[in-house]
Image 1 (cartoon, chains in turn purple, brown):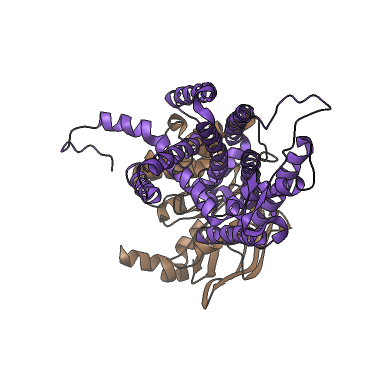
Image 2 (tube, helix red, strand yellow; image 1 turned 135 degrees about the vertical axis):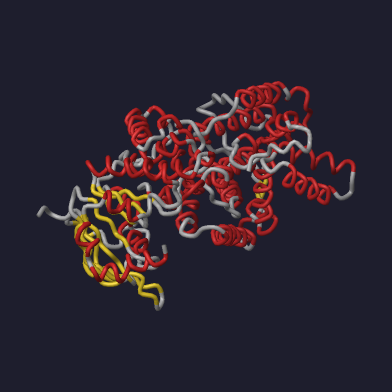
Length: 329
Length: 252
C-alpha cells in the first residue's frame, strides 16, 4: 500500500501552490530553470517507479528520455507545422516499443547484471545517434518548429510561450504524480511492490513476476519518454548527451538524493540538485566537486533522502539524551 | 483407494555430482496428511522445491490431478492450487500482516494487470485476506508490520499467506522449525484444522508433531525413499529405526 502522511500531503500542496504562483516573479532564466527541473522531476519519478517500487535498478533510463526527444527532432525535421495529436503518440509509441524490447531482455537478469544490461542498451542507442551524421552526430540537432495543439485556426495553448509552457509542464508533473500514485495503489502496484520486497515469494504466490517487471519497465520508459518529449520541446535541441550514461547517472542521483521509493522525493531531489548546482556555480569554480560532497553527505546522513527529512527531524527532536539506551534491537 | 492428487514418477534432482533426490515415485492421496521425514541431507526440501516448481527436476515427472506439471514455474503451479510455505521464513517484512495476506489473496484474481482502480476496493480479495489472517491466528495482528513480530508469529503468517491463495494441496516445509513448545502446539492445532479440508505434504523434524498429525509417512534417506507407511508401520519398522530414528535417539 502506498500512502503519504498528512504532513507530507500538506507540504506538497504548499509547494504546488508556490510553483503555480511563481512564474510572474521568476524572470526568464529562473522560469526556464524551474521548467527544466519539473521535467527532471517527471523523469526522476519514472525511474523511481523502477528503482523504488519494482526493485529494478536501471542504469540506462536516459535512453528513453533521449530517444523520445530524437523522435520529436526527426518528425519535425522537414516540416514547419505538425499536430501534437500524432507527434506525441509517435514519440511515446516509439519509446514504449524500445522499452518493450530492452525490457524484454533486461528483466531476465537481476542485480548487477540488470544494471549492466540496461547500461549497455542505452550506450548502444547513444552511439547510434552519436555516429549518425544525418541526425547531427555528436552535436545533435535543433528542433526548429514545435508541434501545436491547433485545431484549424484555433490554438488553445501556445507552446512557444515560456509562461504557458511552464504551466503545461506543471500540469504534466501533477498528472504524472497522481497517475503513478493511482498505479501504485491499483492491483498492479501491489504486485510490483511485492516484487521489490521479495520477488521469490511473489512468484510463489502465483504471480508471473517477470511479466509484471516488464510492464513496469515499459510504463517507466514511456513516462521517461514523455519527460524527454517535454525537454526537447522546451530546449529545442536534442543531442546524444541526453541518452548517455551521464544523464542516466544524474537522474539516478536525483532519485537517491530525493528519497528512493517515495515518488515525491525525486521531484524534491530535482529541485535540490538544480538549485544547489546553480548556486554553487555562482560561488565556486568547482561546483561539481562540492556537489559530490553534498551527495556523499546526503547518502551518509539522510539515507531516506530529502523526502525522509521531516521524519528524520521529528526523530531527532524526540531522541532521548545519550546514555539512555532505548534503541530497538 | 481414491485417485491421487499428486504423483511423482522416478523423480530426480542432480546438483553436479550430488544426487539430492533420486528415483522418487510417490502417490499423495487427497485429504491425507502425508509427512516426509528423514535425516538432514535426505533431500526432503529439494523434493518440496521440485513439487512447487522452485527447482526444475533433472529426471522423472510430476503429475497434479492427472496433469503433467513437470518443469512448470512456481507461479503456474501455485495457480493450479498448490500452496507452499518455506523452511526459512519467507514473507514481505515491510508489509503489515494484512498486506502480506492481501497480496497472496490478490493472486487469485484472473489478472492483476489492473492499473487504475484502487486494489483495496476488491472486496473478494479483502475477505480472503481477512479470512486467512483469522485462520492462521493473526486476526489481532492485522496492522502489525511483519518484521516486528516474533519468529513464531512470522511462521504463522507464512501459513496464512499460503492459505490466502486458497490452495487444495499444501506443501509445508518444516512449519515448526525454530518454534518454542507453546507456539508449536498452537501451529500443530492449526495444521490439524487445515487437514480437515486440505491435502497436506509435510516435512517436519519434530517427530511428536509428525506422529500426531500425519496419516502416512514417507522416510527418505540419501535422496531415496526408504519406506512409506502408516504411523504405526513406520514407528515399528526396524529398517527405519536403524536408518533414522535410532540415530536420533542416540544423539538425544
